[in-house]
Length: 112
Image (cartoon, rainbow, N blue to C red; front, side):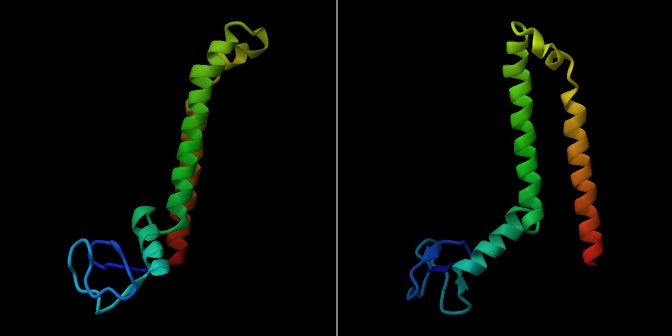
């Protein structure tokens, strides 16, 4: 399969024109592997770092939802979970994001 370099539509290997936008595919053809790499770099901020960043954000949001809406409701009936009501979750959220941003910045600077 070949991707159109103009719109990204997947086309058959023997296609001369893109099925979506009509652009010529006879020039430089972009393979599926090259297109995936290009998409990762553009979509995730330069490769694995962006994907890891968004993965951490999703995990932290999930933990926040568990603390706010599940554990705090259970803590009303289970005395052993009273600590959940006063747990400062947002400072942990900020700390993890801050450490990741600093590490990401150091990685970018060290590549130059």
